[in-house]
Image (cartoon, rainbow, N blue to C red; front, side, top):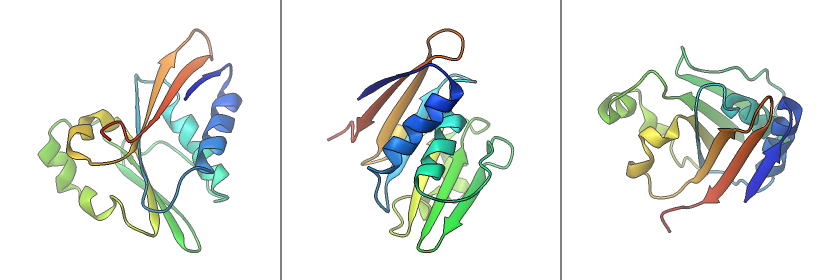
Length: 141
């Protein structure tokens, strides 16, 4: 699926629309350059899941969690981690594919090769506030 958004608000709306297609245990990798719209998209995903939370980038904390009854959203940012061993050392295994959670991983390309199934969402600047967003389900299958 390919989406062109013309503003941050449209990027949030695209995230809301995708949220309806997710199920507990899904892992979503977000890939793109700095300022590409990854965190803005996660704001839409969380909003689409009807979780009332202020979504902010976990760049410096590595992980933010958003909860509602029966569901936890794990929002990770791997920007500052370079080695796959460092990534798994933060306890990533316990978040992946848990039946009562969804996991959104910014800079997900860093662990893509070690995952069996996921959504991959790629963000590209298209000038100004426009973004080209590509969503692929289970690229390995």
